[in-house]
Amino acid sequence: MNSANDRFGNQEIGYLLQRIEDFPGVVILASNLKDNIDDAFTRRFQSIVEFRMPGAEERYKLWKQSFSEKLPLDSDMDLWTIAEKYELSGGVMMNVVRKATLRAVTGQQTTITKRELEEAIRQELQKEGIILN
Image (tube, rainbow, N blue to C red; front, side, top):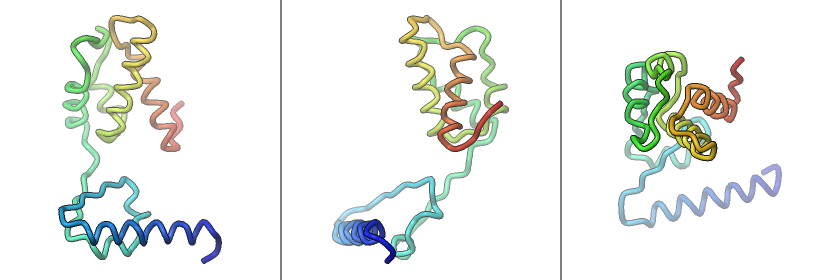
């Protein structure tokens, strides 16, 4: 152990492992950082389900289902182009939708524009360390 942070981290892992082992039901854990999961956890897993990133067709379907009828997309919006251009997970897509919707509502707009959607995508990708030109 190199530091107090390491000791604290190991205590947290130990506590969580004990809680999981003592829990009488089914425990479901989710992470998008598989490489950061401690080996002590993976030894106790009965099943690991991996979800691949959605392809363009799947992203298109997700985009189509993600927006409210109360705040429709602007007429210039081409969701197929957005789906092809940006490789996003479903969770990131939902964050984008929330961000773009909030931006439109606070701007008192009646639609979500392509500019707002792409700005929300840019911000979400930036959180993941991906910078768009």
